Length: 201
Ligand SMILES: Nc1nc2c(c(=O)[nH]1)N[C@H]1C(S)=C(S)[C@@H](COP(=O)(O)O)O[C@H]1N2
Ligand SMILES: [Mo]
Image (cartoon, rainbow, N blue to C red; front, side, top):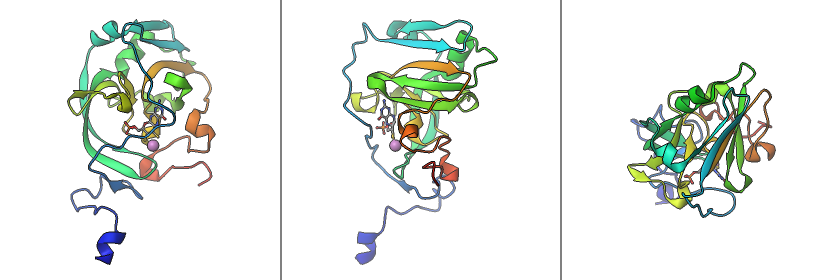
């Protein structure tokens, strides 16, 4: 009884090795963000790619839906300690965007820009991975408004705050620039396997 009250959901043997240190497995997909859920009109929605690239461009929702697509099956990890196993995401591989933009040699970092001023930053080598997607579908369904409709980035190898919901652009930079949570002391690298939660740890 006491044991049941005090323990967090159990980590099974099968899950060991998939659940990073300090995380517990959640069955439901939590909703977590700062601020409110933005209202989005697909007719006026656009996505901008700019900064240290040869060919800056902007695409509409219609254009996005015609881009090459891909699915991934991955686990996601939030710094608030929940991990959700076996997520399916579908969308456009980030490498398609990188190829079209043509990165300049000076491009070494990226800032994700989302609705209402949310930002988060990554080194280019973390973004440039074959499991990084601009996802519009999760677990077989279009993203719900609270999970980022119409589009979010998914960067499975970092804590999930690095995966911006309601994303509207990518800015490539020569120098790093801290994002929203990073400025509040969250770790700049955010690798869940190294428990890079806060920058003073
Ligand atoms: N635009 C935006 N994206 C965001 C956030 C946010 O506050 N605003 N929060 C991040 C955090 S801390 C987490 S854990 C995940 C949560 O995604 P979910 O609500 O789909 O689980 O979104 C990330 N992306
Ligand atoms: Mo988070």
